[in-house]
Length: 530
Image (cartoon, rainbow, N blue to C red):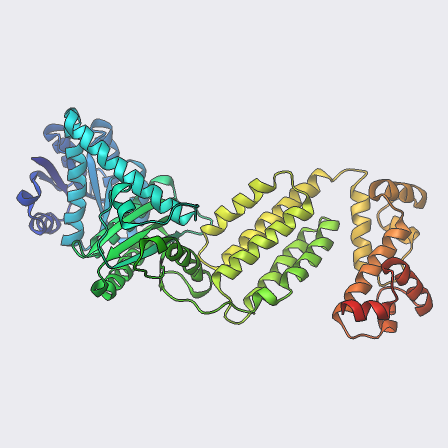
């Protein structure tokens, strides 16, 4: 028998736990009951139990102190913590001591029984390690689990492979498929940038797996899944008549997780069901559907079941990335952190103003913007930068958080670069370029700008040409001509007004300068590109 000790300062809670479970039926024996931490420590030391059920807060020696002490004495002791929502921070600390699971008050018969069954299986597994035959059996089961987990990962990662068949599922992956429906799913845990500890992630994602297994009908549905980081993905196989029941079960499992999310704030859960199919060879497409659908939480909110999505919005045909690229060009030119942040803010406003924009479109736009930025900065560490952004965005549960990630990483990169270049030779020229960007529409001169940055005109001229590869006058002309092109393409302003807005008083001189820079007169340029 597997020995259990119950520790709680409330007598009725101890009595309730004893009454909730069929202990004999589970192969468990209540070896003792304690009503404070000191009694629990004495019972553990004398009776050497396999499982301890304890409240997180007790008089005398606290639950946390007691857990820490008994785990030092019996490292393999399985512990179930009972906690209320108000004490979630204590449960978090208990997990770091190696607690196996937690239960929320009021204790549920089903959840307590399932948890005890799981921990009893762990205890028995350790006891049976001396049996060579049992070791081989467990190794075989583990091999099957790894095979099936590998299959799920290949579906999630969309790796090229032979189409799945019922025969391949049985022979290669030891999964006996039943005639009916195959349907992929993804359950995503979002925690923003406050990433929980590894032990907390393991417990929470274990809850995802257990909740799904408990909610699904044992005889009516086959389940293959894999948990990786913050994603639980897999596929269901069931008879068509169970389709509505399966849908309700999946939704129920996420609802139960949402009820418990306050224990480890800030965490939320969302689930997506891919397209149901009758051929296992279409599971890859079903998983692609689930991958796209799960991103809808970015625009529609977390804690929901996503099954259907409307047609693409008009975002793809818009010019939001062009506007962003132009703003980034100017910000990068002067290493302006504030301007870069404003460019991301503008991108967010334009994207989120698109009617019926989809979550996947938001994420793709952010990733494209990151690619543009990395290319413009000529990053040596480009791959690592993009990988980190992807990893951080995948933990986000809203579009706002995704854009915040982009803003933080890009501004942080430019800020670090600006500090590296902040020296006597570079800083004055950077300030001069920033001044030109802000005052190109005015009749500025080299003498005026050199005075603004604290250098003599002669030294400023030589330093500017050495740093930029062109003189001050040519740089100013290029800035003005680029602004004129933008106004010609994107406005209906008369050429004379554009001439004035980019710092010229003489229309003939402006036209000649523009034609020299662009190859055509302003009016022709507007007809070609406007």
